[in-house]
Length: 192
Length: 241
Image 1 (cartoon, chains in turn brown, orange):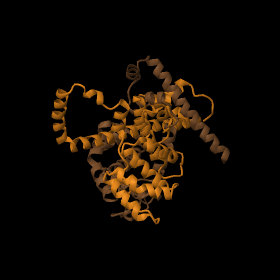
Image 2: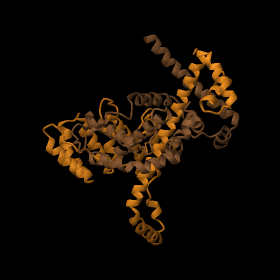
Image 3: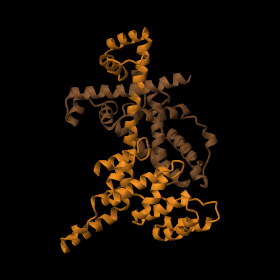
Image 4: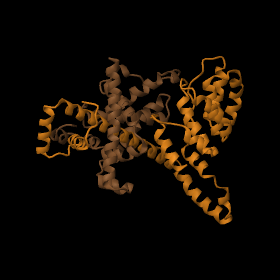
C-alpha cells in the first residue's frame, strides 16, 4: 500500500503525480530541474549525455522514495534531485574510468546522503533485476496494466486480443516473477 | 509463503488490495483475513514487490523517452535556422533533378545516423609515456577531425596493441569517420572484455556499426539484456531492422 487517502491528499501535486506514474508530472519535473543538473555536470568534465544519465537516476530515486513513503514531500523537489544527481556524478568522476577528471565543485561533505538512503538504491537495483526477467510480451502487458494503469479492455483493444487473454497473460507473467523470487529466496535460505 | 502455485482468484484479490481497488468493506475483510494468515501476508508483500518492479521498469522507460525528446528538441533548436534554408535547398534540388532519390542512404544507414552520436572523448591525460601524443590526438578527435586523430593514434596503438583506451578511441574515430569496417574488429574485441571500462560502450557502437554496414543478423545477435543504458534504445532499433 502506498499511504492513506489523507496522506495522499495532503501531498503536493508533483508527489501525487509520481505516485500515479503520471507522464506529465515526470515531464514537468524533467523540464524544470534538468537544466541545473546539466550545468553542474558540464562544469565538472561531463557531457550532456552524462547529465541525462545521472538526472534519470536521481528521478528514479525520487520516484521510489515517494512511492515507498520514504520522503516527506516538500513543495519543491529540486533540492533533492540536485543533491542526489550531484552525488551520483561525483561517484562517476571518482570511478576508475574518470580518475583524471578534475572536479570544480565538490561540497559533498555538506550533503552526506541525507536524501537518498542507500537501501533505496539497493532496492532499485534489485527490482531492476526482477524486471529484467520478463520477456517482451510480458512487459508489454504488465507495463500497460501496472505502470500505465490501463484497464484490461483497453489493453486488449491495443493488442488486438480478447480481454480474457490479457488477464491470463498477466496472471502467468506475474507467476513467473513469483517463481523467480521464490527461487532466489530458496537459494538464500539454503546459503544460510 | 509456500512454493506451490498461487491460484488466480487469490492473486487477483491481492492485486486489488495492492492497487487500492477494493471497496471499504472488501478491504476490511481482506485485512482481517491477512491478520490471521502469515502466508497471505507474505504473498501480499511479494506481489507488491513484483508490481513495484514492473512500475520501475515503466518509469525507467518513460524517463529515457523524455530524455530522448529533450536531446532531439535541443538539436532542433540549434538547427532551427538551418532548417529553413534546407527546406529551400531541398525544393530547388528536387526541381533540378528528380533522380536525387537514387542517392539516398539505405534504411540502415539512416537508422545509424539517427542513433549515432560520437563518443565525446576524454578530458583526461594518460599516465603513460605517450601522454602528449595521446592528448594531441584527443584534441583532434574532439574537434571532429577524426581522420587526423586516427593517424595520430595509429602509431601509439601499434606500440601498445592491448591498450583498451587506444583501441576504443581508434575504433570510435574510425566509426565517426565513416569507416565502420575498420571500427568493427576493435569494438568486437573490446565488447568481449567485460573487465574493460569500455566494454558496454563498445557493444553499443559495435551494434551501430553492424547496423550501418547492413550486418543485421550480427546486430540482432548482440544481447543487451540487463543493460540499463542501451537496452531500450537497442530494442527500438531492432524493431526497425
